[in-house]
Length: 507
Ligand SMILES: O=P(O)(O)OC[C@H]1O[C@H](OP(=O)(O)OP(=O)(O)O)[C@H](O)[C@@H]1O
Ligand SMILES: NC(=O)CC[C@H](N)C(=O)O
Ligand SMILES: [Mg+2]
Image (cartoon, rainbow, N blue to C red; front, side, top):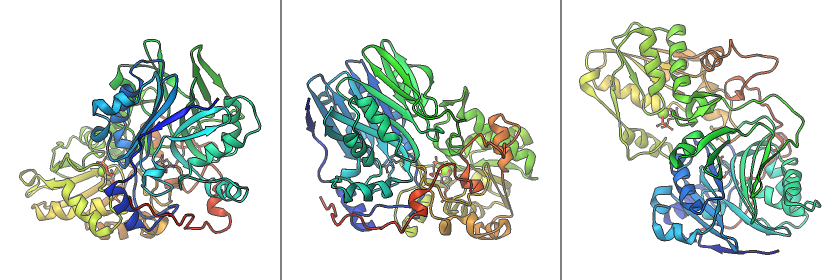
């Protein structure tokens, strides 16, 4: 059966085309030099206001991706799709937009691109009409063999519509020889490598899946008789859904009118979720593994104060994500916590810009000194991470300019020495401060009186373990250890062509 797709996706967007111009046309970006967040996914089955609730869920997940957003619904007759560059609230708060997205099943996505330009053709959910009917997919994560598979598929006749890694899933699904859509889906995900939390929609089901070691998060909720899938529990809270459980690593959940069915298509392995969810990505009020992210970040601050105390007058967090660790540091050390930096609420997470000059400006736009707190004081600045050092360097300078007597920096995660290929999109190693300098070099570069990072075991202790189990690490932590838990086929194979498409979207 073939369903109609009513597609009101944006076809021209000034920001998107400007971005594309700045980056060069149609490049399949890999490991470029920007810190990015992640994507967020949401899905709901069996609710008359499916699209409106999806918009709310995406709004709660906005911290995971601020580049673009989209929703696909199914109304019993046809699929309806809206995909836009920009924020959820700027588009999906309009009643006429939600009215167009009719139906009782919907999925949605907020995007930060890790693979493929930030242009409308890469905005998710992606949709395809395959022999079993319409199929939409929204993906958080990054596939580490997507380029290799793409080359194979294109050489055997596949016509790609985007430069996103996610599109490979649609091609594999379409080419599967299996009959049922769930079997085809399983067939497809067995061929992909890397990190994925997926929500997918057909005319009769909602599907959720996590990669074999569960790098990226996905939770299940109930809202009356409806089922909800979401990247984080904060998206369940906003729609009033009750948390049921996390989707397990390697699990596929299929939700139909008959309820939820669980499939385990991969050999059982221990989970290794990404530790960066705790450190930076997830919203502090989200619950992972039974504990709030806020509580865990505070514990990271406690561990940090124990490992690297400082003789100072005041503890100052670098907002936003440095705040809980700074509270923990203050409570453990007994030194008062003060908001010595005020954050501008109209600038999102790290100001997204392709040039260092604009990133520098971004940090200035985002953070201002609360000089009366700083003047004449010895302070500890607490942040969750240092990637390129842009934030820490600017803020340290700002503190001295505002009259701080001493500035000490404490980071509630270990030095990031290795790039990420699983959806974080930390830069290649030449741009990572800790990959190019030792501790003293970083201290000098940042211009602070002292600098210390939390140890790798300290992170594990904060989450509740005795330390990292070297034989079977409990987390995906390659950023700090260099130990990648999946094959990096695209990185280790023959050269990845930087340019896969000659189509530049200019409007
Ligand atoms: O060393 P850098 O390259 O500057 O990157 C590290 C900074 O980026 C992140 O903050 P971000 O502004 O993205 O988000 P937040 O407001 O949630 O802290 C992180 O919390 C650090 O502050
Ligand atoms: N950050 C992510 O999870 C990105 C999802 C997908 N790889 C994309 O580039 O769109
Ligand atoms: Mg920050």
